[in-house]
Length: 254
Image (tube, rainbow, N blue to C red; front, top):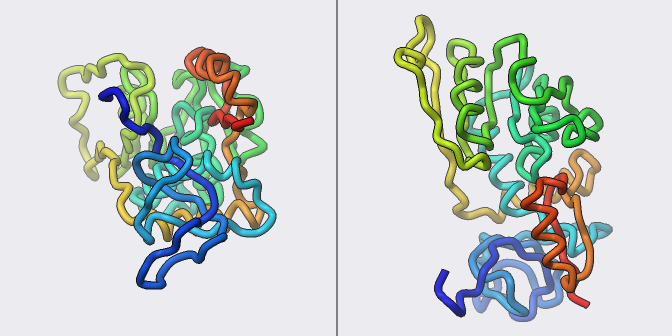
């Protein structure tokens, strides 16, 4: 990004100036928001891009919710009803993955969580995963839905695990590797399978309110895997890039 660009999309804070038309939260309300330029002392959002934070939730921790929460929620919603279906989540230890595991289980699915190492799988059964596997070789039964965040060989392997009529939601490419489909591997008899992308973050306010209600009710947990002073930002970056953080990192300004 050009020098001087204010980065960030996830925010939580207090309203210091309400909308002029009287809609939306009032001055002093605690809110979570999604939009550009959030790494600043003050930021401006559309009314439909914010949601009030329920009492009892930690303000700073909710800042870890918007991007990953919207991605997981809208991706799973786009796959249709989940009750009784088998859902595979790749990269399940990350921010999107951890929320996708919880939301899919909440929707009545049997969740298979794929991770990069045994250590990365810790705690995922507690979040609702019926199976936790390293890679995809140990996924023995086909699946109805894939929430795919890794790309590369993971994407092509996940595609091969789909049942007829299944859907693979390609929403991330953490591996940075190319995905090469073998000749005829995208052809299959029976109901068509789908490979679909995600990118819709428009009008997030209502969905942010839904996610916050789930958190307040104890149905899902916030995906905070690392929290410390912003003076340790280099340590946070190193831990994230080294894949030693289960979820998101939160830096407290002190």
